[in-house]
Length: 244
Image (tube, rainbow, N blue to C red; front, side, top):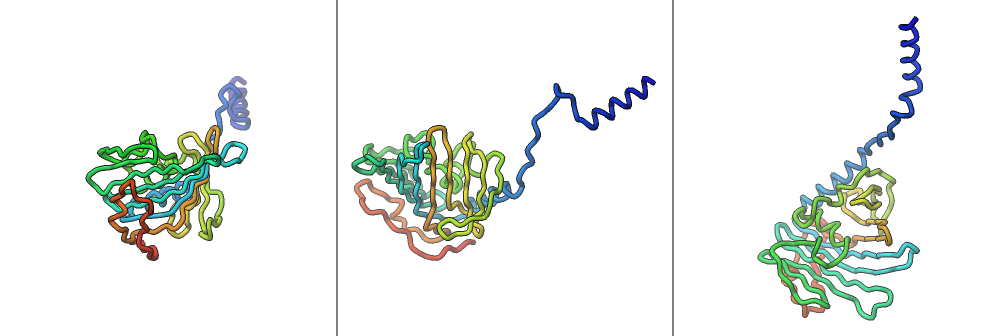
């Protein structure tokens, strides 16, 4: 009789699951497609010889009103030429603020319209006191040493959302969490490159757009010999993208 009761009790537990005191949170099934897309994104940037784009970052308050608009450009030639040039303006500001970080190999220099030129041994975007998160996302995919432990492809629990167009480019939309904040990225279906990023932070939001992307094309060496007195941004050679 005792053995029969034990068998019945075991069967009951099998049907209803564990008792409430042992209940556990369900484990989320990894989205392999989303993880694969992020891996392809990281690979695409890591394999480039050169990259340039024209981009915009818009920061908004929680009510949707604009807090700051940044127009910026990125130039990169492997192994050690880099420049990011940003001009930011708040809705009530009288003039934009310009920030530039550049190197042609021997040294890294930084300058802002309200700061003198400073030099350092290597590219250091975090802790530089310059730019915003927009300056971290793509540059650290281009070169791992520019960033910290977390880069954009390290999103937590990514999920594939849909295929959508961004500026006429067909993209995969992936949602996840990055460094504790909710992120979404739009990756070109053909080249796996970032076309758009949105992020929700504690007290503001970000929308970041990357346009005029050029890959593995010649970039004038003068781009990386910036002088603060320059007023005109050099333009990389315009040519169709050519992937190796």
